[in-house]
Length: 378
Image 1 (cartoon, rainbow, N blue to C red):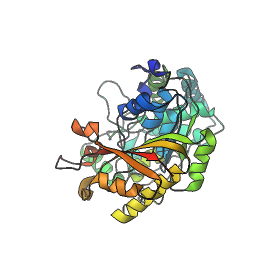
Image 2: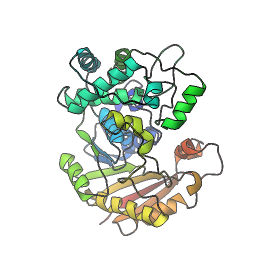
Image 3: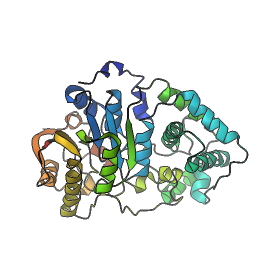
Image 4: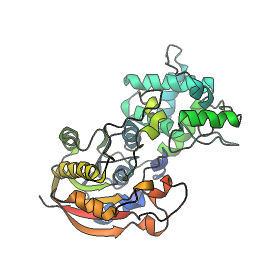
């Protein structure tokens, strides 16, 4: 068992909320597993890291950890949870960028951007974006935190009293589609607020980095876990893995990458919505989905110590409620070297808090989430 679990407090877990993200499982899921079973020198991997919950749990317990995701947004959010700058370092970095009159910015145009952000706010965001993309302006651990803070505040609700987000009225967890958003804002005559960009950054820096767990060796990698080179890179950083705790994209979730298009823009992507998802697990059919997952499990296993443990939380969404999730995952593990040892209904499903509910307009009769446990026995 990890020797640093006594350091986990309400303050140290705040960092896990740095960026709302709708593909996530509760922190207690990986934390309770690792706290109960992982040895102090265990190395933890999440090949579908999403918002980095598994990696953050590993950090809280003093374990080395790697997160991998095809989404650069996921990698950036996870990276932000693995660094330990002081709030002052983050605030000073943002202040220096915004006070530099020579800092140029490429400002996107069009109805969406005009209605999404006040001119001054968008200009400030673009100046910070430009500076961070150069990657030599701010120390990397500080830049990682500043990216995470801005990604978390980039879009969300307009507070009546305190302004905590930069945008016009928007969802917190995913970027609104441009045509729908423009219509929504125009019909309601919603004007983008002029907020204090530096003030929001400072508030969030103090909240999320004012009391963090000690730094532990780890990294977040933007990459495809089906590719051997990606996993080789992960293994080179901290060695072979003992624990894999993960949740693959749920069957039917085709818009995992496009739904984060505004955050992706801030990290250097297009200022327009792109629905292509070439690096995403295939959802073109059950067989292709299983085949892609099998490639991941095989690749992961080749970079694990004998006896390593894999825990997978999985379900399905919307119109793809056509298969037993446990059966689908069990099939994907066949002939990979992973031997299924246990199958459990997910705790959050039993409490009526299912990750898949995020994607339903209304509750119907969904497939429950399941946790599948397996051991590496090549």
